[in-house]
Length: 248
Image 1 (cartoon, one colour):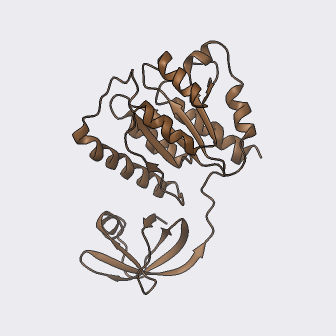
Image 2: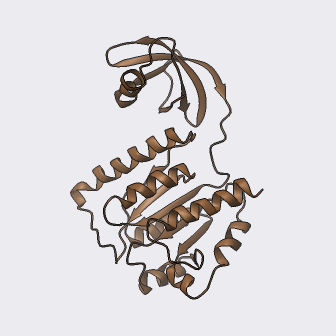
Image 3: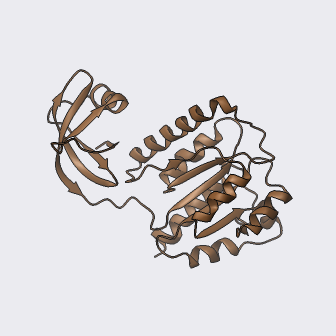
């Protein structure tokens, strides 16, 4: 069954669906009265059954709450340097499927792309929509939050909220450093918040690295190969998923 996220139940404990989700259920999935779908309310998953279909909304009742196990035991946020084309959209989609809880787009010095300030809100909203759709498709209980565009200083300030802070640095990989990432994963406790920073296509410069090291970040390589900007976050999330879900 398809899954949809809603903000809450009405006063009668019913599910009200409108907008794009209503259109998808009624027009795309061809659901009518008696049809069922998964609904996620504040992180809790239930099976809902349609009892009324109106012209712009539908009403459904909760049949039963179900246990969902679609979340990583450690919350991981990815800070991704702005990249060309739709690469960031790909990262948001795939890393949502892999279990990330947040994405911070950030303006690195070597980012070729510069977001027009007048379009930042629209671009973040677009990424948030992609995260929601990917969370529904992958049966997540949480929609990752796409945070506002940050510069380096804002990123460092936000990093104070995290227990573990890593920077994926290609020079570390070139120098043969392949153990820091694995050791960090093995030392992370359940529910510790993790932040991993990735650079754009041109990588990170020495000043950015210096400031992040002073802020308590650890540099790590992601294996012996140099990964593209859009590949590195996927690699990291896959490794985290293996460490915390498959290896145990």
